[in-house]
Image (cartoon, rainbow, N blue to C red):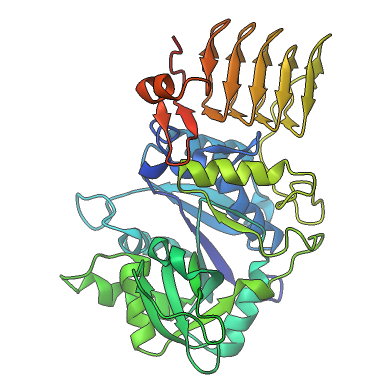
Amino acid sequence: MRRGGPSVLGIVLAGGEGKRLMPLTADRAKPAVTFGGTYRLVDFVLSNLVNADVLRICVLTQYKSHSLDRHITTTWRMSSLLGNYVTPVPAQQRLGPRWYLGSADALLQSLNLVNDEQPEYVAVFGADHVYRMDPRQMLQQHIEGGAGVTVAGIRVPRAESSSFGVITPGSDGQTIETFLEKPADPPGLPGAPDTVFASMGNYVFTTKALIESLHRDAEDDHSVHDMGGSILPQLTARGEAQLYDFGTNHVPGETSRDRGYWRDVGTLDAYYDAHMDLIAERPAFNLFNRNWPIYTHSNQLSPARFNAGGMASESIISAGCLIRGQVTRSVLSPGVRVDPGAVVQGSILHDNVVVGRGAVVRGAVLDKNVEVPPGATIGVNPDRDTELYTVSKNGVIALGKGQLVP
């Protein structure tokens, strides 16, 4: 963000392993997981930053990052003439022969990126959430508030607090009084005792405050070297942290239905539910907002085709699909084939999945290149599914990349 405005460097933390999203993360980093048919999870944060004119972005990668690195380098090509870029940055072991100890250590080991750019502010955002956000509004509050760090927070039920970093705002509603990482029993908000502010994993730092806090953390032998567990409590204790209420953020083209939408898709159930949000009659998250687009790579494929007997309803069907069976309430990625007599219901099929003649797939997530043989069933016999596949707490059945179906 230049041309008369404040200089901002974007750093996206994309090195997470994503164990709770297995088997989709068995062969790739979590931010590289397909979402919504054609997107990768990382596309949402990158689109938000780029739409807001943050045009110099480093994506810190580590775990099984090949497909993520390839996606970024082939998709996110910025204008080199203007000095803009989106670049993956693998773990470089700049501070010795070790990998990242945590998200704060990832930033510490990557401070050369900050020193090279010399930005006034650094936007440190997570890479695996589904949402739209204009970071410029958060930056403006950060500048006006004069804090060392501003943390984006969203209101969530207090019962879910153990899954998030929880922010307790001060009496002014903006200064962060306490920051607790995944607490079991945090206090509720004034006037809303069953609600808390959860950290979205998006932070705007004044560069000096970021560098100083990372060095202080590195000297603490008892630290877990994590943003939520270490850096934010440290800056909160020093009175340098403030809250940005995501509920006040507005993007062009939003609807009353999808305003303030944010989902952490870190589990199979959350991943599945977020897809179901896309295909509702009035989508809870609208992929068709052309005023704040989500960008991704577009393969050179033919349009989707429906042969005699093929039909789809309440579904997203990507390019290159061939539908000769029946598809309802599902999301199909490019190149999926559904053969005659096959039934796909309430499912998410990744690239090049084949559902054979007369097969049935219900309530399932099939990773790329899975072939369901003619007459086979998934989601029909719970005991058999549990024996053969990964089944989530809420009963979502998941098959990994190329997994064999008996």
